[in-house]
Length: 537
Image (cartoon, rainbow, N blue to C red; front, side, top):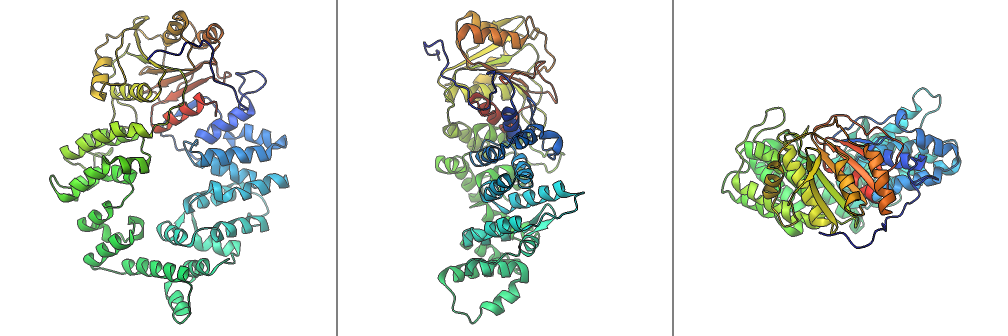
C-alpha cells in the first residue's frame, strides 16, 4: 500500500493545541483526562483506578478562566461520541462542573446530565462523585438544581425503557433508585412514570392495590404487564415457567434470582437473546457448566450468532475484542485457574470467522500510518492481563491498520536496521504472526522507523511502534527523529510507543502533544490511538 503522492499532510490541528502546534495545552490535558482518566501522555491498559482531584488540574484551570461551558461541551462529546475509553472520568468531570461557583457552568453541567449519564449505572456514579466532592463541606448535594436534574432524568425516559432499566440495575455505588427518587422529590410527569416511581418506592403489592380498579392508558397497561412478569419470575420456582417468561419477554439475567442461574436450561434460554459481547465473556463458564456441549443445538445456535454479520454489525464488536475473547476461551481456564473447560472446536472456528468479519466495524481514520514491530526481543511473552501472546497481539494490530487504513506501511526492525517484512492486508492472523516471529532478534532502537520514513521520503501522520521492551536504546532521540520528519515531510506527525509487556514507561519528553506511550495493550489502546490520530486528545 503506497502512500499518496502528496508530501504535505491533510491533517489539521484543532483546538486541543495551544499557541505552539505541539504545546500540551490545558484543553489537550482535559481531553486526555476525559479519554482515559489521566492528563499525562501515558495510557495504561486495563487500569480502572478511581478518579480523583489529582487528575484534574487542567479542568480546574479552565473553570477558573471562565471556560466552564466549553468543558461541559467536551464532556458531552467524549461521552456521546464513544471517544472515552473509560466512562468514570466524564462522570467525575461533570460532577465537578455541577458544583462550580459559576452559575452558567453548573446549569450547563446539569442540563447535560441525561446525555452523559444514559443509564442508571452512570447516574449512580455521577451522584456518588458529587457526594465525594462535597465530603468535608457543610452543605449537602441535594439543592434545588440537582433535584430538578435528577427528576428530569427519570421523567424524560421512555417508560418501557425505564421499567427495564430499574429492574436490571436497582442499586450501585451505595445508591438506589429509591434513594434518588426520595432525595430529588421527583413528581412524575406522566402516569407511566408515576407507576414506575410507586413500584420503586412502595413495592409491587401497593402497585397492585392502586391500579387494580383504575382505567389505565395503553402505556400504563404495558408497563404494568411488564412489571408483573418481572415479579412473577422473581417468585417462581418452576424452571419451565421461568424459561417461558425469559423467552416471551426477553428478560435478562440481572432480573433473575441466583437460584434460577443454577439451571442449565435457564442459561440456554438467556443465551438466545443475550448481547453478543456478554456471550463472549461467559463462553468458558458455559462450556465448563455443560450449558454448551459439543454438537448440541445450543452450541450450534451460539456459533451462528457469533459469526452472523448482522449480529456482529449490531453489536459493533471490534476484531481485537473478539481476538481477546477467543484467546481466553482457547486457554481453557479462567485467570485465577477456575473454572476450567475443554474448548469446543466449533466455537473456536466461529470466533475465528467472526474475527475477520468484524473488520467491517472498524471505521477508517484516513491518515497515513507506519506500524513498526520491534523484533529485537522474543515475541513469546504474554500481554499482561490477557491470554494473548505479544506475537499474536502485534500481528493483530498490524492487520487492523493494514486492512482498514488504505495508506499503511508495516515494518519490522532489529539489529539497528529496518528489516524486510511482508505482512499484508490479505494475510490471515496466523500467517502474519509467523511472518513476524521468523525475523531474527537483536538490539532495540525505536527511532529506526521514523528515520526510515524520513530517508525514504515518506510523509507519515502516525508512527505506531510495538515492542516488548519498555527500556529502549536509541541512536537518536525518538522526539528529535520525529521533529526532523515533521520538518522534512511537512506532516504533523505523531508517535505512539506501545510497550506490550510494560506496566509503566514513558518517552522522555512529555511536553509534545504528538507523543503518547501505551503500557500493555487492550481495545482501549486502539481508541486512544484513534483519538490521537484525529487530534481529539
